[in-house]
Image 1 (cartoon, rainbow, N blue to C red):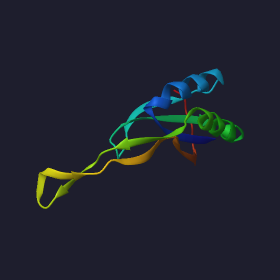
Image 2: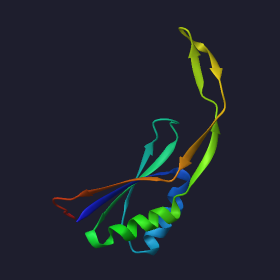
Image 3: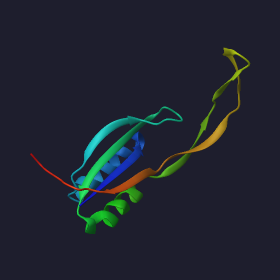
Image 4: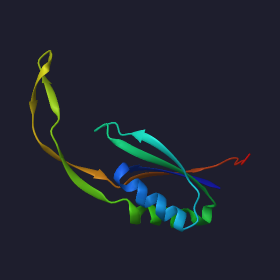
Amino acid sequence: MKLVMAIVHDKDAHNLADALVANKVQATKLASTGGFLREGNTTFLIGVDEERVSEIIEIIRNNCKSRTQTVTPVYPVGNSVETGITYPTEILVGGATVFVVDVEQFLKL
């Protein structure tokens, strides 16, 4: 048994959830927050047999697309937090970060 943990952008979460249900994959969905942009993410916890891991990853790949987004971060100048220099920057968001780990024991109580 494997645990697939997929952290996806909130904009992709609904499509991924629908695709998992359509493929008869049970998942637990958790709200999470990204560190860099502090934007909403959704973390899916999916327990599956080892034979289905590649299928699950393909479902995630097909429903979670990367895209560019322009952000304007504020960088403090000197010791003052109120003033800052801003430079619009284009970054890549979306897609998915996926972890696959072994599950020692799985119980449904």
